[in-house]
Image (tube, rainbow, N blue to C red; front, side, top):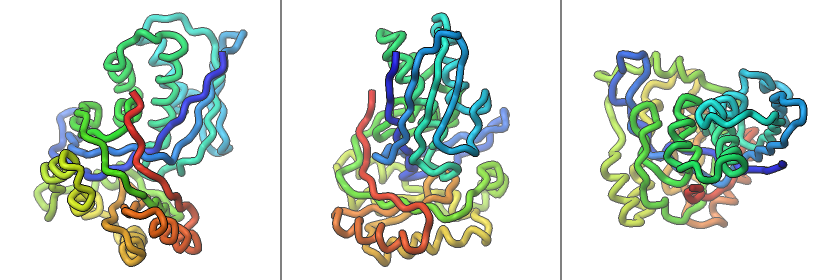
Length: 288
């Protein structure tokens, strides 16, 4: 058996933090969108019964510390099926530590490929339940498309798709620690919150302008000053014609939404002279 599964990047059209939970996590309210930037995950059966992980970036873990290994183990534990022995190879295109769920989407691709190969009758809802302990973003990445994510991110409500548009992604040459940002959050002091209800109405109406006006990530309010380049990229995207711009996840990747491909491609080309990772993509449809 050999199969290859795409692993699509994730953006946060909005990100809100509602409260800190007793288990140490936070209750979130986010509108998630998958995009066409993607990794490729290839699974191959092994005769020796072992699990072997490899990837195209030498600095990423190739042992049980890789989320793909966790996804494999969780799938066979959750289904009760015997483990056949597998090699998993990840061809990376999504930047790491970028706020785009690069690891989570690889784990989700592993789960979809395993379902197709070993448990095609397994309900998708059950696969998302299996995915939840692998990582907070993994259930969304299993299904993709456009969704409201609540709880830790595992409680999903399907939304109408984002209207057709072009998206420019730009990651500066640094990463941001997610725990560091959560530690900066003081919920009572936050000045602004996303208009999630307005964003949902805009998506329901197919109103790209209305959706773009409501892009908002609450983490931007608590970014330490040393990450100010995030705001430089936002300003650059707006100057280059983006309808709106926002940081995704815990950053540092910034994205801009464009109606026309030509304008988006020109913006991407302009940014490539200044930043190491710039991509042109579109919203991706639901996978399952």
